[in-house]
Length: 324
Image 1 (cartoon, rainbow, N blue to C red):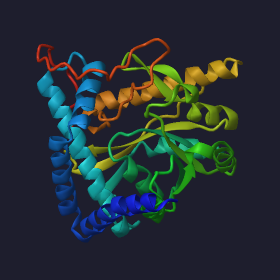
Image 2 (cartoon, rainbow, N blue to C red):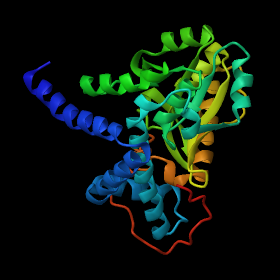
Image 3 (cartoon, rainbow, N blue to C red):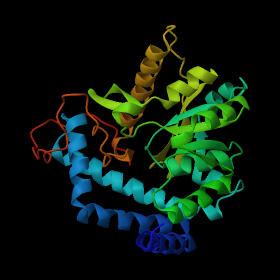
């Protein structure tokens, strides 16, 4: 590693480390409020993220008026701030107090899948507090391995994984995951995968996501088909009425079998992507709209992010769940 790279790593790491430790010293609700204040500042000053968010909402929810899109996008940053605040409190969370922060809904779906003895593949995405999702499940006594692409900064990578591992969860390098994931499942243990990020064309297949072809990772489908492991959707959603996070488990998704493995991978990936969309539609302010989900395009299709979003207010607002 060059001297410049080392310097850059430390310049990035120190502010993040100090912020995380400072937030961790605060009471939980105060840490969340401070984190949300910081997130709203970023919303105000980070033009590129705002433009990406508006463009994604314009593409996916064209029927939603500008005022509602702005409300959704502000909710996205509030959600990110909430997650940062919760992440800073991981050192304080234990089996004794996790129930004050997170409760289950639909746990029986996970339990039924777990009873098969083949491990569970937890289908999730960048919705709600995804970091707290796996962490809370581990604290409740159900640790899992999770796929993650290592950060470019090894100092930040070590720091974040140290917090994640407090609930006995362990990462699997997404770049070299096949053998480790199959080994984990065959030993009866669980693996979590976030499957809603843009993927390179040679690493995924195109599936409809909000009616637009989106390049989606095939990893979950491949692992499920090869290990015959149950796939259970799990999402941690903030419930404003309860003032608590709810870890929702939905029923196991039956795998589609046609006898053609390549076709099976494509069909199951499309089904899993549809599940993500269904949950995002229920809780639009809690999904990561600032990610360029439709960046990879089918051959011959134009870049959907080449121009700034249209700022029209003419569409009629759709009936969406606006809970943040």
